[in-house]
Image (cartoon, rainbow, N blue to C red; front, side, top):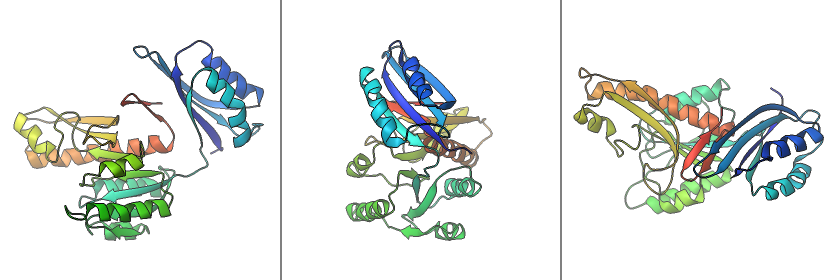
Length: 284
């Protein structure tokens, strides 16, 4: 795949934004590969993701930032520049359930997730053998009510040592402290075994069964200080019936959890997610 640059922006919606960006890129020899845009009419905001081939492009990173900054300032843009050739470092946190972890590791191995995975951390040892089979170091960091600060200090040391860009909670059944979450804003992705905001908490399939619902779902979202309340990235559902028992809901839900988490991670790695006002825009 050719090396490309990706620009994500959002700003007040005004005329001339697309013309200004595309004109600047054209003036310096860019071949635009993809461009997608959206508006939030209620808030009067404009969003855009644009990707261009770096072959033949006249500006390096420093020069582009210098050239683009006046245009960005004129439209009051918030913007992020990324490169497809840069592989983010991803850490995976896990507890006992391994279905999401296994799915992520397999997709990573076949090249579906363009990242490096320097570590897997677990508060139980159940996933140690699986991590070892993929050649990824596993770190057992027990967590209980009395050692949360110590455990998170060990986790942070590992994350900083490996310059981790994204933390994926692959059914990691521990609540992160507000201090930990604040340290990695919009850099922690979780999967919740429920179609949030319905049936939040630790046993959503049991709650759904008691309510007799006909659809169950799973949700991937950014982690915030409010439990199970971060900006939603992806959701999916499956139909169930009165014949399904709790164990059937759990089994069907596992398939959804794998899919929605892997999609969220891939979209993050491809720089397709833009966060604003407690919500997300996910570009095609």
